[in-house]
Amino acid sequence: MSDQYRDDDYSGSYPEQQYDGYEGDYYPADGGYTQDYGYDEPPVEEPPVARPEPKIELVDEDGIRAFELSTLGWLVGFVALLPFWGLLNDRGWTWWIWTCLAAFGIGAIGIELTRRRKARRLHAEGLD
Picture 1 (cartoon, helix red, strand yellow):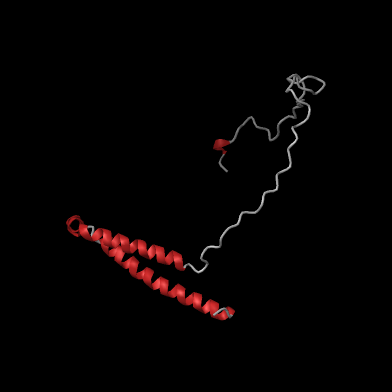
Picture 2: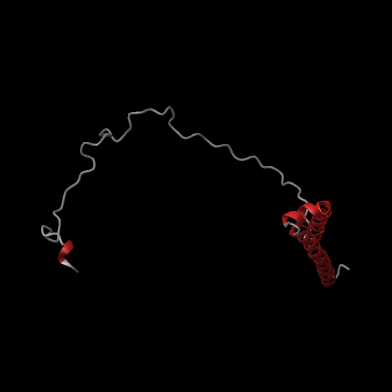
């Protein structure tokens, strides 16, 4: 290492300094506080009241309803944008219409795939 940053006065060790954290401390000698907070013990918490479990209906575990609703939403978007074809074409935004149509097609495929998956699961469980 270069001697450029070496401290000439540094001898390699520092003298030990005695530190008494309680000398001249703010707190009284008996260890207590001068303030009175108005209570001696913490407040008692009441036990929680037992509440009945809410009855929750199971959601469609196969996802068919989700595919149907989302596919219907894309179809509604496609139909809603058709009257604005000219406006969208002038601004170069016809991709919105094609996106809705493509998502509708993918959703229709997804509906069929989830229905087949449900049928396979029911057949495997013997619940046909």
